Image (cartoon, rainbow, N blue to C red; front, side):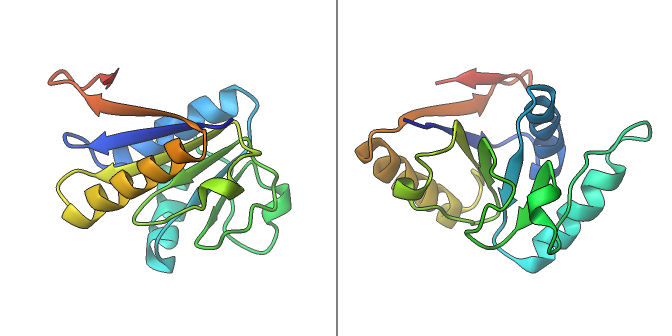
Amino acid sequence: MTEVLFYHLERATLESVLPGLLEKTLERGWKAVVRAGSNERIEALDALLWAFKDEAFIPHGAGPDGETQPVWLTISDEMPNEPEILFLVDGAAADPAKISGLKRCVMIFNGAEETAVSDARTFWKASAGSGHDVTYWKQSPKGRWEKQ
């Protein structure tokens, strides 16, 4: 059973949340795939992960050498680096049956976008129906993530 986490963005942006989640992923010794909805988003995330902190970057790649990357950015269903965790961002989707080998799958969605909320609800139902452990996370007024 895979843990499927839903991060509902209301007070923060993907650009402010994703790097921290990826840092925690790497601290655990896990590899990750970040699946986005467009090549433009992949390019933006690629630039962000190189420069989000002055003193650090997140090792990653978006090219053909995915199997060697601790974090691989893609729009495809492939996971060549054999990750423990899959992040779904910017409208990206996953088949709940195909995430069973992962420890976690994290869907980060913008609560201000009706389509994103609808897609998250659909994925929640499908993931729960497939036997995955689903949880919903929302930011408190102080900015902390709280399990709902």
